[in-house]
Image (cartoon, rainbow, N blue to C red; front, side, top):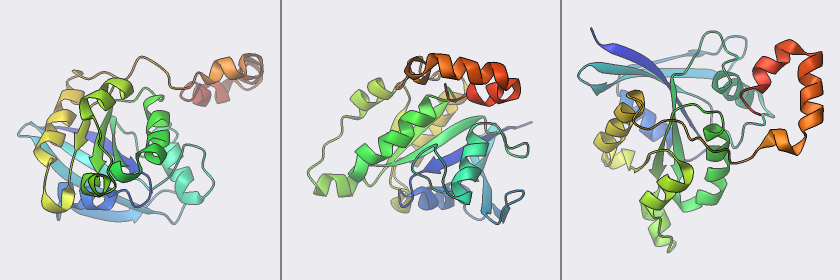
Length: 209
């Protein structure tokens, strides 16, 4: 029997996330609402290997893990395992290669959650037009996660992306051991005080500090 896992699809707005979602899921899509909010919940099924299918959960586009709008709160709750109905096994993060600096801020926050991550790098043609050259292998070393250049509209890089997802499933690419930002060192005493006063909150804090 095929194994099925939940993959959260995340990224900045206008990063090419919707195009990738459509390419992966085709007609196997459903649209509803996340519990308690009128925010679209798009899900779809894709086959990673003959024995592995994945439920792709298209989360609202967001720039960081510090939510300000209702749709950003949806992504925050899912990624920090605060949504009882949606529990991702891994994250597929879409990053715009032509605006990599802005996209990598969100990417670093996701990697710091210690969730298995695969990065899909879009807009490589636009990056090239801007004169931007990206060392994919070097970027993988710095991030500590697989990075795959793709063009969903032309179906380029999709087989390689699925192979990277398969490797992540098999723990060949483990979550990055390093932290981009050691938040605990920034305010160790206040953080410990909050955890002692609010034990339940400590469960949430363990994902972000």
